[in-house]
Length: 172
Image (tube, rainbow, N blue to C red; front, side, top):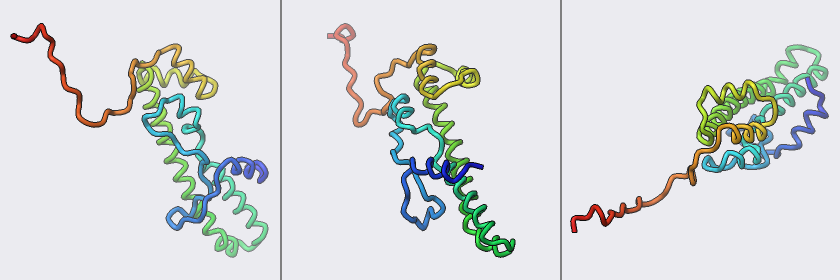
């Protein structure tokens, strides 16, 4: 288990939230907002969209609070009633953490497969062999697999352009 100094240091990197009756178990959130899905992959990596979830250190903080209350309440029944909210908070944070990590890894895989000319098997093999940061992994994939030659992955809005007929196809 981490010391409270390490936990508070990591929590200081997050933004403190006001109380929300619908998400009462969350106390901190990321400081920077995630970029739009159509943003380039390298921009998302540099923004920290694929970094560790903000719930991990909140779980550690809940664990520390529960252990701290163990010394305050030596009677097990009194301790159990005093930590009911903390234990429910920890359970919900774990659920959020697992959901966040699963979705984050799936989105990362989709973005790599859409950005580079690689298959799912290539992606998984490269991940297993690679040891470094996500930015370095991006650079390695860019040099090895090359990007798709797409002007933008953003869908176009409005009416599609008219197709111009060639003069050679015209009967006149």
